[in-house]
Amino acid sequence: MVPHALSAPRLARRSINGMAALAVVLLFASAACDKVPLTAPAGTVITLVASTNVLPVNGSTDLMAALIENGTTGTGTPGGAATPSVGTPVHNGTLVTFTTSLGRIEPAEARTTNGRVTVKLVADGRSGAATITAFSGSATTSLEVKIVAAAAERVAVTASSATVPANGGTVTISARVEDVNGNPLTGVPVSFTTTSGTLSAASALTNDSGVATTSLSTSAEALVTASAGGKTGTATIKVRSRSKITLGSPAGSVFVGAAAAFAVTPDSAVAFKDVTILFGDGESRSLGAISSTTTEVHVYTSDGVFPVTVVGTDVDGGTAEASGSVAVIPFTFTAGGSPTSGPVTTIFTMSVTGIPVSVPITRYAWNFGDGSGAQNTNTGTTTHGYQSVGLKTITVTVVPRYGSAVSTTFQILVTGT
Image (tube, rainbow, N blue to C red):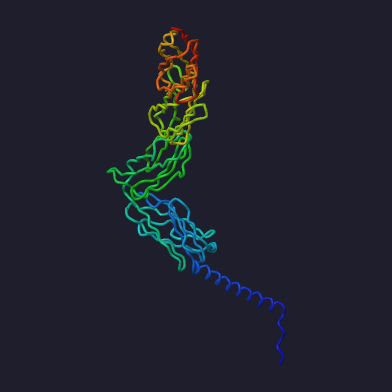
């Protein structure tokens, strides 16, 4: 017997019933997949960081976890962001679960976006060390946050130097946070502000000694304020004045060959590490590091007006300069014989007078004008007798220790007996 062919209506009803059954199967399969969360694959590394590692007993802080497939251990600093080293972020929607030994996590589970999730640790009034653990699949990591009951009572701010050089400089600012009993508070966030200059960091956490640090670079007076737990402290950094230096010129007349004394006085504001004086005649002298008035002596070997300059370099690298001038004049003298005339039997005394006492003389050279030859003496007085009559012209040359020799002449008359 040949079976009857299905009519069109019956065939349509069977197709609809089959599609409905398939839809039900797919719906159940989808629901089953939704119940299996997406977790991190094997080899994933989690880097966990908190906004701060110290909380008050009623405080809270953000926790951020970064999940990297096939990564290496990353780093994170309180108040900063987790920095995984290398690898690929896990898929979006990867579930991360958090637990804590103290307080609570809100929410306790979160799904990743670009490999990261952020939740919050909320303190519950108890103090102690909260160990937070983040895990997904086989990947896990932990972080400790201290929850403390002590509150900041005082912020003491100090600087490595109370001043900076006139052209600017950098100092280290330290803020010590203490409780009511003067004990240091560890891991407390400290905020820094300044009225001038720039800070290397606007915030930092206190170390085991309760001290947070930053650096200030400034060329103007600055007031630095450190704030922690509602308490503040300040430190003022001043700018040192530029050093000055003065030059004192010699008193009285300055002669060629005589010692000229110059007084150099440095300012006491900033120490000088080197001072040099230039005498204007091509010679100069380094005085080194001086801190008080120093007298420097120089001898000029020619006459004229010479500009004198003193230049100082201070320990900050700044320079100071002072200048003046000195007029140097030739020394003069007179020479003569006593008596001025006499018979050939007379012993005449020759002398030089009027040489400034400040001019050291090496020797006196005498030519008596009678062919007897030159005579050198150490003093400006000598004697001589003549064997013939006539008007004698005597030349005396004064040879100073410094500078050129100077000569003059005078005459005496030798008569007969």
